[in-house]
Length: 334
Length: 217
Image (cartoon, rainbow over all chains, first blue to last red; front, side, top):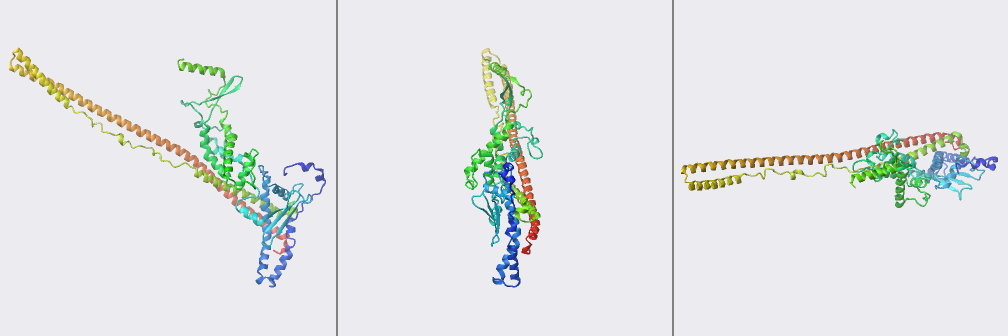
């Protein structure tokens, strides 16, 4: 919706004169000046409807505080819905917030001319409402300042931001303790030349690496190192767990990360799957580990050339097999 | 455009956008702070147990024994010597009697036989004592060497455990330190973003009160 170029090729839109003058604050405060003046005069003349002008004074205070509250409220809503602009935004979030963002940021197709409107109401309890209307809403979307404030103070958002798992996994690589410290740069990131340390290479009883032979050309092969993946996983486990527990500090972000990176099309819903049940947390943990092992660590455990240059040379697979058989025959006096 | 959307002057709109950006930064920093706090807790919870590298050690005192306890006393040799001397004397006397030799000759022979057996006996006794002493010394040296090797192996085991623990501890501590440093940074970013937000809103309020001056504040 946000990134679509369709409007650039829409003749009707190009010939229209869209009106974005929602005048949200101007309309909200249109009658407040008169009300404020009347209240002030009543209090100054001690001509109030309530005892000791208590109600009038309270309302004056509300009106005086209202502009700051409005700015705070609108900026809060804008900051919340601007999450939809993030590169890894989860489109499974409520689409209405994307519409709100499009309206507030004057995107083509979301003007008053297109049937959209935004109204702010100053409520008598001091709260404020923002009501969004238009073709993309099934019914008007109402946001209350007090509800939004309470939500945000409890660490919840109305639009879930997606944690950058790719960045997290890159960092995790340098933390799991299977690379040498000199393979990690000053930004705590793994260097491109990094190699998994010797202790994780599979070796025989004489301490020599057990190679896997891969065919590189017609009948020619070369040795590649094999790694003790179980040992690597055991070593990495606590660090992966701690990274996952960091993501899970926010359940809605866990859902966002799942939907964007791990779900393989089986999306979770923000309205139905929160709070997140333990089975989903377990599934997330399992998938996260697999994703890390397969997409990040695997590149360091596959097709790694032997450290001994002699073992790294390309050889004739058939000849090597015959030589091995001969060596066995001689060793066993067969 | 934002001014039109809100129906206020451009500077107010800028203030709202500034406040919005600051709120977003504060929210992101708060989320990062929460995540790092959780991560730190997890790292602390999953830290290796403190080990006692000497936990598997056995008391070697039971392997110490007195190698001299079975040291042979050469009494048997003395008894044998006495018996042989008696037999020898008896045999010599029988011979002297049969050949009619004088009593003085028989006595001399008997004394010679006795002296000979005494020497043999003394030699055996000496050899046996020497052997026992050597055996005891050998046993003692062997036990000392064995104990020294056991101690060396135990110390090597302890040093190995301590090395592994130390290395793991060092890596875990590094990770804890890094996470704690990131947490401090996230807290600082959150505080700065909140300060920016207050600044932006305060700046915008002036504009709003100008525009909405009618309410007289």
